[in-house]
Image 1 (tube, each protein chain N blue to C red):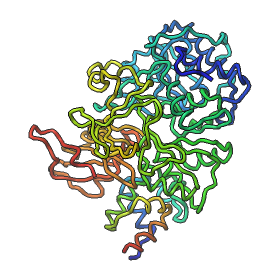
Image 2 (image 1 turned 120 degrees about the vertical axis):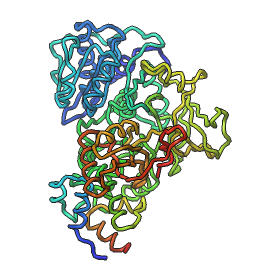
Image 3 (image 1 turned 90 degrees about the vertical axis):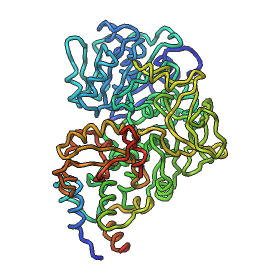
Amino acid sequence: MPTASLPENLAVALLAPNLARHPDKTAYICNGESVSYQQLADSACRFASLLQQSGIAAGDRVLLILPDSPVFVAAFLGAVLHGAVAVPVSTALTADDYHYILQDSDARFLLYSSVVPLAAELASPALPDLVCTETLTGWLEQYPSAELAAPAPAADDLAFMLYTSGSTGKPKGVPHRHRDLLVAAEQYGTKVLGIRPDDLLFSASKLFFAYGLGNSLAFPLYSGATALLHPGKPLPEELLALIAQYRPTLLFSVPTVYAQIILSTARPQLHLPMRLCISAGEGLPSAVFDEWQRLTGLDILDGIGTTELTHIFISNQSGRIRSGSAGQAVPGYRIRLVDDEGNPVQSGTPGHLQVQGDSTAPWYWNLPEKTAATMLADGFIKTGDVFLEQEGYYYHRGRSDDMLKAGGQWISPIQVEEVLRTHPAVADCAVAACQVMGLMRPAAHLMLKPDCVADPALERDIRRFMASRLQDYMLPVRYFFVEDLPRTATGKVQRFKLKR
Amino acid sequence: MAVTVAELKELMLQIGMDKGLVAELDPDSPLATQGVDSVDCPAFAVALEGKYNLTISDSDSLRLKTLNDFIAFVERAA
């Protein structure tokens, strides 16, 4: 298997050992299609050839707007193999966000799925593009399948870039080097999860998230295992049907989806085949951990990661789980908690979480001020989370900014507030976290215009207004009609005072 | 306190849930298998707490799966 420390092209590192060892082994299962490692490598090479013929140079960004599928994996690896920078983005963004990312990344090639109509609108004479389906068999057969080889990248050469929500409401690009996914696969996938070649991995979280990219691309390929992919929404009944059919040994998801699976079954017990269930993306409520254990007999390993660190850096481990805790430091990662002045806090005292590890992004894309403020000279990065440490276990205590997370996805209050202010009845507003069913969700605090009345009909109208303009996970679940909002002396809204 | 399926469905409509989806809900089947998603579900729980002036604990929230579960919960809490 590959070694994380070698300066090797990421795609070569993930594919070559598998081609030498078991080329006919199934690498991916998706929509009834089984794809071998050989097929996957051939398709990656063909996509690299296509990029070559399209004039894409090393370091150019290749935008991928694709649901989970073997085509996603082949295209990602093909772009990396060619020396380009793969930029996979969500299939559920708004047109504005797609245009912003296209401009910000300065992408030179676009590959998109026919199931994402908004992506087609990005195509232009200046941007070579290709539309595809989710089936790999027969894809790009007209292009030559070159030998799987690439020059060793320089230490700082980029392999891929992910976009995550920024505090200003605009997505921010987080680039990563070739080694970063390999480090995550070795430190977390192998040393914490013990992933083996006979494992079948299944992630409800999608490949365009850092969490899903590790779960469904880096970890199975690094370990020579097999992954099950699901292009559709992670609806509980569909996930349970796939689990029953294919019997994965590892399930990766977010607490919201675990809760939805629990709520979807009227049976007193669920007999599931997994040896490990993993949760990240948002804090795992103890109630979800307990109910999942009661329902299935299985533990959930909770952990915390960020796009900047590539994957999980604090995690519970089998046999050493503490419910309510995010766990212990993953091998290879250094954790420190500091006060507002940057001084280390004592054990048992909440502090700002800073992390250092070999999978850290080198900078933010086009955001030098954000880079300087977040990525420290000693290699540590500020996560924005407040944690408390006791006996080596870390407990989440909140955020040191106004960002909130729902369903494993970041939400900038500003983005939701901007939409709320366009409703004709809203004079001013603030969005802050509230806790519902043990999970954090956005709540809207609204000041109405003088001629508007706060009643159920208006709330219903605002809910529908928002639902037509924002992605589901951003929608406020609670609406409070208020006379005023808490503000600083200079008039800035104090969202932290609205958290419930 | 007697609570009806119709009252809970009316509450769902007040929080903007789809009229067709609400009309078709079977009170004995889990809401999560009938199109009530991870956004509707907490919004409904919050609306229920407000209307009946009660609190749903984290652990209760994972055992209230059908409309009839919610009715029994409200009637017990009354």
